[in-house]
Length: 145
Image 1 (cartoon, one colour):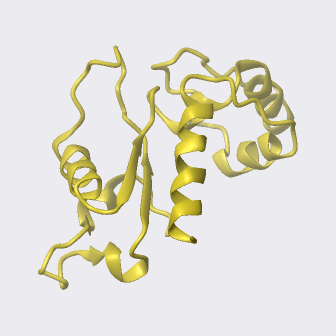
Image 2 (tube, one colour; image 1 turned 180 degrees about the vertical axis):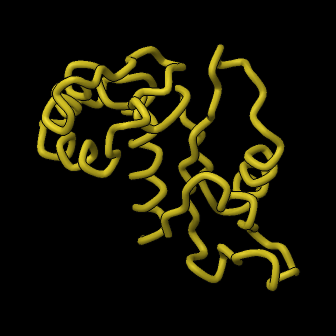
């Protein structure tokens, strides 16, 4: 299931109020949730309450709650790759490449940039990406054993 932004407020791992929440366990017993940290200053900045609540609930059950090491998922794309991808979509736009930057300018189509990034070789040596992908692979292998 893909979610974005404010939809997180309506997710629950084991909440009995099914009319208000999407029951994630009904989708799959083995949960992996990836969410932007939305931190804009430092890795020690506190997460918003909803993100913390959902993270705790997933980590206290069978699941992985991956909160991005940078501000958003786009921070995991290496700067040269992101710059090249954005240039193909909107040649005059300039992405920000700091760990806590909002990477894409508002006038750039995220989906088109994502497609351009997907067409380029992967670089897993950004932030904690390689370790997090290893965690996800191990979790999936264990769930399928």
